[in-house]
Amino acid sequence: MKIRRRRRPERPTATAPERPTPIAPVAPGMTAGGMTAPRPRPTSPGAAPVRGRDRGGAGWRRLGLGSLGVVLGLGVWVGRATGQRAAVPSHLELTGAGHLLERPVDELLREDGLLAGAGAVRDRLLATGVVDEVVVHRRLPAGFTVEAVEKRAVALLDLEPLVAIAADGTLLGPAEVRDLEWAGANDLLLIRGTDREAPDFASRTRFAGRLAAGLRARPTLDGAVSEVDLSRAPYRIEAVLRPAPIRLLLTSDGFFDQLERGVGLLPTLTGRWPNLVRADLRAPDRVVVRTGPAPLIATDEAQGPEEGSR
Image (tube, rainbow, N blue to C red; front, side):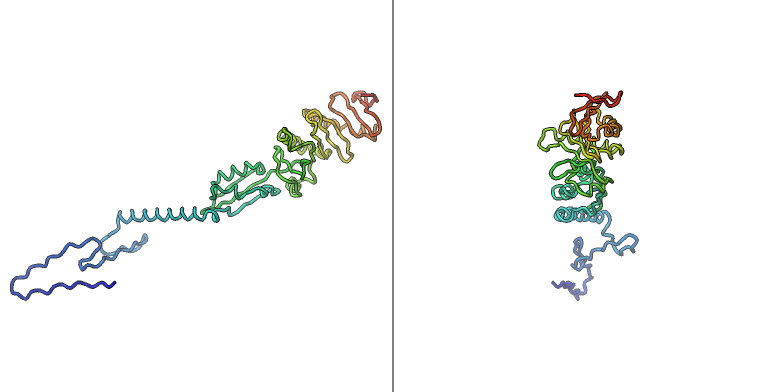
């Protein structure tokens, strides 16, 4: 649309004295000629001031803040609209055997389709039981870095398949070679006698974890035991020694003391009975042994081995 300038009417040629032409009031934002006044452009700090009347001031600052609020509002809306794809962790650093990756990690990091808060992510990862330590670093605009350290396996449960178990009884997941590497061991204790369907399965696995962790803290005893059977615990626990598969009968309360006692007596017992297959150390003052073809024999530690019937 073209804008034409309005011409002023010609002055009268009469000789009468001239009177000033009345000027109509100018509307805000318009020039005297009817054209729209150009809006001053905002300048950056330090720039030369704009000539003419300052149309900015407090009004411009209010407009600027309002515009910023609109921009931020659009940013939030766009973030929510694209949160399904943009809100993903920029980096996940996992130290351990990798059992955490067997779980839906992406669901643990989200909340209603958006990226959950750093505190919520930390709590959810710790709630899996697999993770021992979590450090979350938030990275704007829609991501963060997660550093997670998994728990170490201390034993393997004789289930189908074998399950790695932590010191607190947490079932980490199916046993892998990585569990040995992360545990720093050539092999792990095998624990039998646990049943997933049994009502005491949770308490039995917690006890198994504590027992295995206690053995790990005693390298001499840990190296002497290959597996433990908890099927008749707590009053009868069978520890299978190595390299000879001799079984020691122990109790849960005195497990480590009785095991240490049995390992110390083993050279004497095997020297007296080369076909030794089992030794019962649950009594504090004597040992009941069983050999391959022979009946049960009771021995008195104080007086040395002496044959007798049970």
